[in-house]
Structure formats: structure tokens, C-alpha cells
Image (cartoon, rainbow, N blue to C red):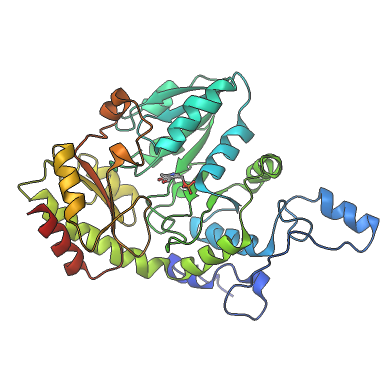
Length: 387
Ligand code: PLP
């Protein structure tokens, strides 16, 4: 019999991650933190097996496993591994792979929590990071110190200015391990592993769960590598909640239709903003004038649900946020509601003024996570707030 072609990712989002739910169409919630053993031999097997899902929930849980299997299929990976949050995924991965004296290469344009983790706890533990400009071709590879660099960490599209790392360039780095925070793209918008990257990472709190009702992280890659990270993660303890995994798995079922609608609205907003007299700059990789549009066209399957734009001053940004009515002023992204935030005073408030300036987190910058409302309604709310 000829091999059946794999269904499209949008279909896989509907079919994946059902093994632990029996004949139930909705995912089953395994709330248990522990499982009975039949004998000492059985207990020993459960305690020492890799990624057991019926021993103790910090080691593995069937509902979490279903979520991991769904993400694994969407990422085209051998395995996926979930954590209690995106930061849980980042911290556990870096600390699993690095020791005192290790070196990391990371881009300067990062989510502020990731930046703070590298500059604070990692530096304190003797893990040193070289920060590079993600938009400079070849910058990651050039900063690698052979034998010392353990991880190259990219975030693409980046938070909050949507700068892109070239996934083919990252995939060509054969040692050290490459990790891509792909949160802004979702697994339907980009597949880093297809480009040769070792680990794709998401804050599943965002578009994957998609309803602002779960805090979760997930990584995908080679099974042996994820087994190693799992062994450390069991001790680190950033263990995902089965309830959050259930919400995220439910969210995955509609990921394709949600991101399609959000992408359409984001593109319409970007086109309107790019042409608006009150807007100094619009950052959206789907715009043909975006400086990295050629990279976007090569590696993004969807241009994205988030965009940012600069109104020139903090006062103009504050006045915009005062006037929006449909858009809600809140951080986070990927949910049903359109959210507007001012990165300089919220998501990136921990950066020094110099760091804000060098990463383009300007006083007038607004980030929009485009929701599921009708496109015309979001457009008219943003237009009236700018007027
Ligand atoms: N990575 C990116 C790109 C983010 O934007 C965030 C949070 O905003 C995180 C990681 C951290 O995720 P979490 O809040 O789930 O820990």
C-alpha cells in the first residue's frame, strides 16, 4: 500500500493527542498526582523509567502527555516536553544543557524575562552570555566559541518588534545546540525543526492555548535530547498542570481557524498603520517594506498575529491606550481579545534605558496582539484611538 501523505497541520491540530482519552472526544483530565504500584518491581520500573506517565505527576501525566503529543505532531518533531510556563521551558532547557563556565549566544532582542534570566541567575551561576543583534546576518555563528558555547538561543519573531532570526542560518550551526523561541509564530506559523534547528520552544500560554486560561511552556526536538532535559526538569520542578494542559489541548483544536482570522486582521491593521500620518513606524514582517520581508517570506507560514507600531512619544502612546475601547490594555498575546500594551512600561519594564534604546523598545511603541473580533471592528477601534 502506498504511504498515506501526512494530513495538513490544520487537520493534525484536530486529530492529534488523543491516545490517553480513550473514546472520549474531549480530552480526559487526569488530575491525579500519583499512581498505585502492583509490586516493588513494578514500583521500581515506574520510578526509573524515562517519562513515565503513571508514576508521579512531576515525572509525567497522561493529560500533559496528550498535549505534548499534539504539539509534537504540529512541530514535525520526534518528541515534545511540557513545562509549567514559557519561562519554565526556557530556564529548564538552559540549565539542563549548561554548567558553570558554559557560554550561551543569544540575541539582544528578547522577551524581557528571558533576558533577565540570562543576565541574572545564569550569570550568577557562571553561565556567560554573548548578546548579538538578531538582524545582522551571520551574527549568531560568529559569536560561537567552539568547545565552550553550549546553546545558541534565538527568539523569532521577537518580542515586541517582530525582528526575525534567519532559521536556515541557525539550522546550519551544527554545534552547539540551537534553541528557537517560536512563541510569536505558533507551530502553524513556523517550523524551526524543518530548518535544522535542534529545539523549538513555545510559551504555550499564548497562541497555542489561545484563550488566556492556561500557563504553559513546551519544547520539541530529538527524543534523546528531550529525555536529557526531562531528567533535569524532574528536579527543576517547573511541572505543567494537567488542567492547563487540557485547556491548551482544547485550544489546539481551533488553532488553525483562530490564527487564520488573527493573521488576516493583523495584516489589515499593519497596512492601515503603515499609511497613517500619526504612526512613525510599523513593525510587521508581512509588509513588503519590512526590512526582513524576504526572510519572512522564506520561513513564515503565516506572517503573524502580533504587530507593533511607534507613535513617537510616551504621551502619544498613553493617549492611544486611553482611547481604545474594543482593544483591551493588557500584556500577553494570542488570545481571543485584541490586547494593546506599552512594552516600555510593562513587558520590557525591567530593561535599563540603554537596553530599551538598543532593542528599539521606544517610549512611543505599542504592541498589539490581534484577537478574534471582526476585522472591521478592530480596525475602526484603532483608527478612532489614533484620530
Ligand atoms: N517567550 C516569549 C517570546 C514571550 O513573549 C513570553 C512571555 O510573554 C515568554 C517566552 C514567557 O512565557 P510565560 O509567560 O508562559 O512564562
